[in-house]
Image (cartoon, rainbow, N blue to C red; front, side, top):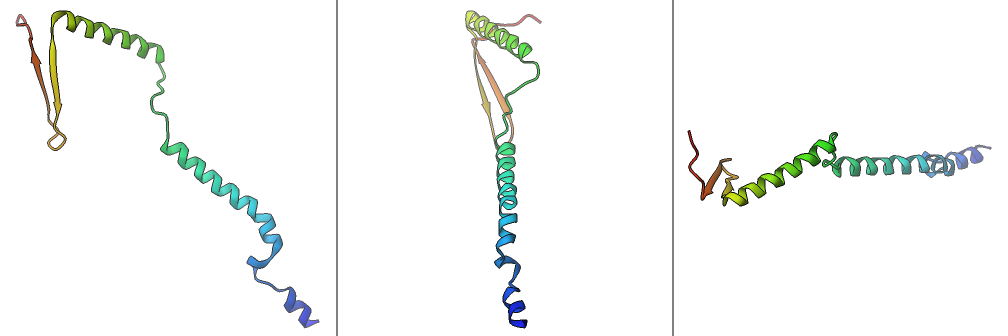
Length: 98
């Protein structure tokens, strides 16, 4: 009788029913963590709440670009990443009244 008890007493990781019950749960936990990681790292940041207003602003920006072309304005914008300075030089700028 003691041989039968010793034979049936296996470590938990060698039991069939442990793996039968917990394998799907372990799989689901792994898949959920992968899905959450993908969702957080690949978030779509371009969605805005007021898309209509944003669309109207695009048209306004295009009108400003066309007006600058009509006036013959051009400029050069430079960013210095080490110092954080921004430099703007405008070519063919008309003299503005004060």
